[in-house]
Image (cartoon, rainbow, N blue to C red; front, side, top):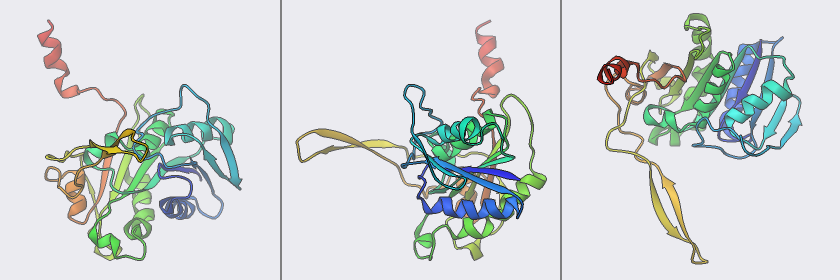
Length: 261
């Protein structure tokens, strides 16, 4: 099996090393793991691509490349340059430092990388590690992802639904903010929504007197609705959420059409 891995935390992020080990075990002794990841951190870029300017790409080692672009850029660079048409059998994006559940999905470069792979017709999984007080005391905060990642990916490959539609399915996986031994299992869960929290901006004046704005996130340990991704993560479960890039509100389509006659 040939597996492509990427992330949004950057080529030197510890979560990428965790993902590389997961991918190597899935690929097997005769498989290949290719890494094309951002040269610098790209958290929060979503599904952005470098459409208006070129990006530099550098070979760092065997099957290991860094690109000055987003995770979606990295997938494109891998497919159309690095791999030179030899398409991977699977694309894994992560392991992100921090959860990409609930509304975070819309901002996530980790999810954006998996989404681009799906748009290119490839099976793809985004993986993220929810952080919290318990993970801070661990030798590695990625312990849950490290110890359970292979089982989750294998379960999805064996039992997941993999279609070939125009907006084909991909998967978003979040590991709970607990020690590996306290993970309670896997749950398929829809994307949730955290109420009473959102991104915002905080002004800051630099030493030179210039005014800047820092983007600030809201509290991450507020549960989303019962049974949804962030809620089951906070209960100790690994959340598995099937997704598509189609943003149509299908539940509202008929009513809106009727209102327009």
